[in-house]
Length: 317
Image (cartoon, rainbow, N blue to C red; front, side):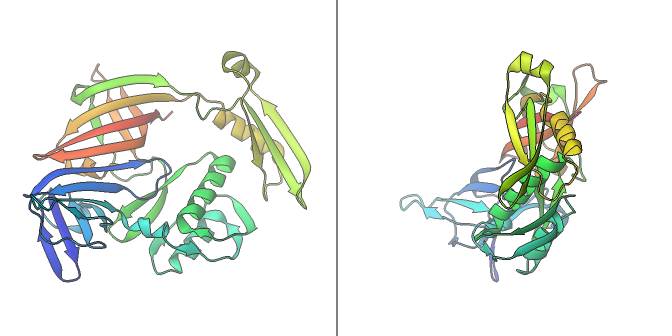
């Protein structure tokens, strides 16, 4: 790994002097954060950029973290410095989206607004039509709002993939590099299931002039008997076929997902870019079965050429 600090023409190679380095991401979080501690550090400044490269060459293709330091703090006795940095999309949390009318596919409207700020931002169509006037809010809040609506209507979740200063919104599991870990590599592993985001009853409502014009409810009676009644209400928005929408969403939301918590140590530079939203594969103990998992949370550490990752996973069927 290479750890580099840069601001304007200044560059410092921090690789050999880094005492601690960790980074993390979670579902719903746009920007990864990175914590670093540097021994007898050179003068690092706020808004200077921290850059992490898998491997030992400063190639853009190997860079997996790029973003501003927000709070450098120096120990006056030792000269050691600690700091937190965020990926470039952190700025989407610090700037407001314009109050404007959305009129089109939610994903493409999001792309239009963010690109207008000068950020390289690509977003697919969400398959969700929006015709709303948005209130004052950060771009990050707008992203969260529109992706949550897309999940309600389509069942797809999204995350932001960073490649230096280029941001790309992808459906979960659409990472181009898919790491595979052998069960023998797992230092710890526990499996289970979660009903935290499961609903057994779904109601879809259509509004007109702030009043409910029509409503359709469907329930999974067998699952209600098993885990209880848990209902969610979805605004149909521009969707006209309420029965189709409620049927599809009940099928999505009444599944009890498999969960897995693992700690894995590896030296795979390709897997260093792993983040929440990625698909990974695990070769099970029989050395034949391969299972698919979506990363919902990743806490990673690097020391002595080895990556240690604590991953929360959700089964992909």
